[in-house]
Length: 313
Length: 282
Image (tube, rainbow over all chains, first blue to last red; front, side, top):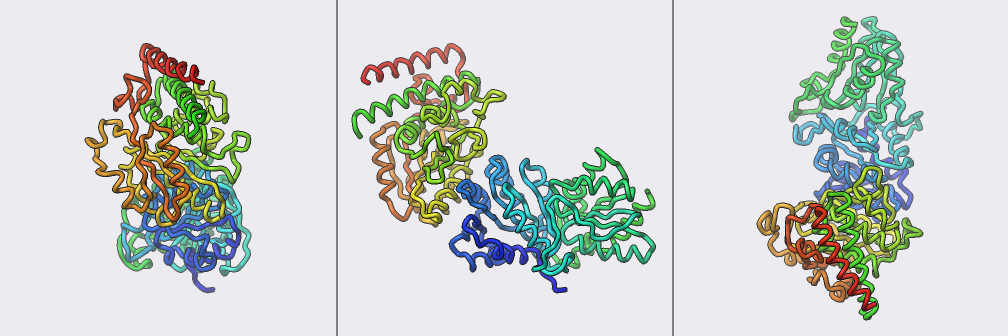
């Protein structure tokens, strides 16, 4: 199976599904990186480069959406979810407008650019905004499904995308897959423990599940692509069925996927929970694979965390 | 401008000022100073210029208005109610729990409000987005906005100005309510803006300075804006904060303060007298 970055799948999906008058795309001088350049080439009249001014871009997108448009606003996650946080809040979420904030270059696998560009807090900031829904697809096929879905669903969305080319989990880009926003997908069935992952940590977790199997441990793996609204039923079922959960995210362990799962468990069906992610620290420069090792986000790290958690079960 | 139109606009403004004071007094909070300085601009737009219809507030062909200085909601609400979007008696519930008239304009809950604003700098950007879509869709609606001079201290305003000039938005006309005052004092003392006129021009806008309380000057400037092609127009309107209430005029202290009962009575007496004088002429 060929590798493709979710940002590339995003650019392709915009072109594939964006052949309609209401779809407009905005970018902030990063269209070749966010891959909205594909859309710019296909539909130049409906692509707007707003320059290096992300706050303005978010509010402009909001204004466009009041004119009946489905506006996609793209830049790197750090600028979308943090520099422009208040514009996303007040211009987009408060009036509940039809703007899709599609942010690429999330997490530490941005790589060489280093901590200034590695956004590890966006799930937390975006999840805290009323009216905002937060989705993070793990591969090209699910990105295509997500972009098609958000294009046809009114209201604000934050879609978290990555720079790194990743293996397909659901198939190739063009495969039509079963995918529903808000409903976690079970990637592997298992009864001893549940790993809940999102983004490219799904691929890391698949490798971990296979390693665990060799050790006689049957781990369930959920792709929690929708961080908000989170799939409460799937989390409760995992707690009941397996009695132990490990969350894996390319994000600070505070406020993101692990935080969201912990909120559900603690209110309804407590079980032991281990959160794997960035341990409240900034990233560094380096090759993505080297960084995943440096910050303990490899399949081996996940296996170790599972064994540690099972010991406490 | 015809005599009768001029008088009607003066009446609109006089009624607006009473509603502004009524709202802020009832709420015991809110922003009278900048609402009163923008009153003639609001009056010209809602009393004369804007192609809007309370019966079809979402008409895609309507003119748009964005109050970028969202704290002057009392002015916007007064103008909308006098234009017929809702009953002016709603003003008494301004800022109260359960009222549709939120402290700052709310698009989702108030008929006729084209954009939720209040966080300074964002409104003008949303107006840019609306004007860009007017161009894309080849519609002839026009987009209007009012900014405060203090608001120009927000960096986003200049991002918005840059993008409006870049996209040649000659369907966008903005006003700067240039009253020279902000919460902490004179804008020149708090954070001086230098020459607003020169800065706006340098950002590629057609710039027209006017007396912001003179309807004929406002009308001439808006008309000039409509004829200006290839660039947006900024009408820099020199105004007096608190205009129309003697003790509020040119006082920064009345930026965001409600009158007490005695002040309210004095303000209403002055505004009633001004309105009565105009009604005699009518």
